[in-house]
Length: 537
Image (cartoon, rainbow, N blue to C red):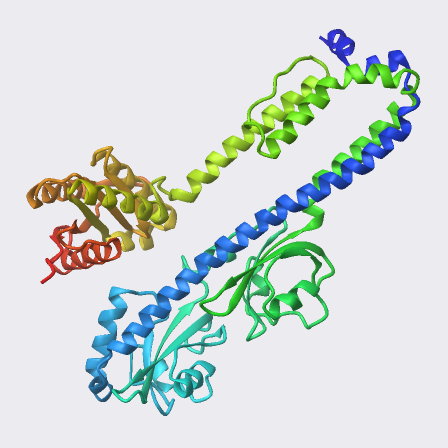
């Protein structure tokens, strides 16, 4: 085996012909290869950083916009007479907070004076004793009569990092009567998780910055959260980003570490996300390759001289053909496919290595595509994939003039089990529920995890309401059967809300809202049952 490898070795062939003149060529190739690889890797990493920053920023922006819309709608719908009836106002707030609990630390109505609160949900007595007259969000919402987002800070009641949104409650003439505000803890699950619970590589991560407040709202490094941003002059690209610039580049941070960074805006709050990766880690493969070539070339260059022009033309022709084909693939002029291995020497190993890399890249692309559209815990389609599929299903149903059903499934009594046995047990239970749901529907139907302990199901080509109700009852029976979690038998239930397309709604957002409302009807009717959406008048 070793003798055969030796006879096929490109080094042995070069040594046999004696190669001295290639010394300059090896040095030149080393310099050019190192520079080209670094530039090429920098472009690839910059695009990756930009993609990561944009994705995270879009996720945070969507969550902030959802909270803004909720708060503005509540402020617009709040009946002004309730401001003089605290008990009724508190009940009004509690009902809406229960329906859409986006503000983890609750919602409250502050009087025009800013002293104390009129009502809140959930009720906290200590909150009634607070003075908001100097709070930035209160002054901005009251004086500008528009929604305001406060400076991220430690809450005076919760003593944890929070962000407060405030919207004015106006009378018919547009005068400010009071301020409705909602508080969200920065550590709320599902809010800033992509920043606070993720890293890039071994030493990189994310930052979420408020340029108005000059503060780190969130960061992969816990010690940086709610800390002031660096003083001007310490980080060139950071200074540009604070003035509105967005893009990618290489800079030296306030700690003297060179980093590759990408900036993306979060328009809903005038924040921006930074994806950062130290260049020492980013370009480590280039340095390793450079050092490897340097070490090997010192031993090889003494043997390469006499017949380089004639012999290497023949020796490196397959390599040049492979490189040319690789460039054509990279430029899009040829299909991306494995290269033929024509020889069993180093050139053949390089081609096999390229083919192996190509195979791994395809596997990586497939995994990334799967992760982008599926829930990591249950393997079911995620919210993004569900919305895409229901759009397609509704379009097909509209063309074929058929009907489909949307089921909004919320697990009953899941939270006590999650609290009692821990999140690992809760995750195990959710996976079992997902497996049962998958076995309880047709292959043509779509089951997805909508978030938390909520699932959605799209039934295509349905018959009547009775057949749909039968499917829902079957799912309730499946879900209600006992589970074994950590060696313990537990029982949960399911409340299912059903909305039919196009009977109950002819657009997706309205259909989801109808199914969600029907699910809450099922909750109010005793749970572990199914309710259909009320037909619109």
